[in-house]
Length: 172
Image (cartoon, rainbow, N blue to C red):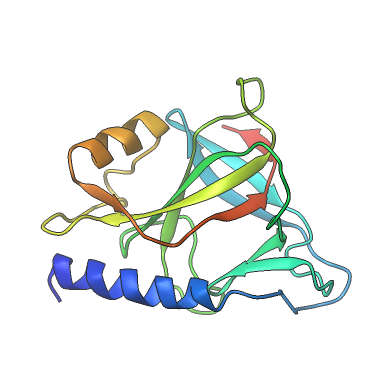
């Protein structure tokens, strides 16, 4: 499948899934999930609290629990870029390592102005006519994300506003 067709298919599939996002309904009591990400060229870890909570206020995106649903809550957020591509190395749908592979790039970290641990997710894919190789050439900073968007290498998916709380807990 060519890159343009893949980007189009992903765009429509993700838009359909976001349109049906609802409450997370997994195990009771909630679980913590530590996710990998990039910030300013360095590996970081961030925590998604109560990811699988049985409480009805959990948000979801596709096959991913997002913890507390922030819809309607006025809280400052920063961009957390989610680059969806088959070559991504950081995350995928649980149980299927080929579905919705993606990498995370954080725009701020503790100590930066604007860091609150709350995020607005910005979903990105390779723009038509472009391919990514995140395995060998990862995008590791918000500046690289912006440059790739400005050059037309990455394009944003029209998913609407998706927010989550996930504090940064470590760096390497």
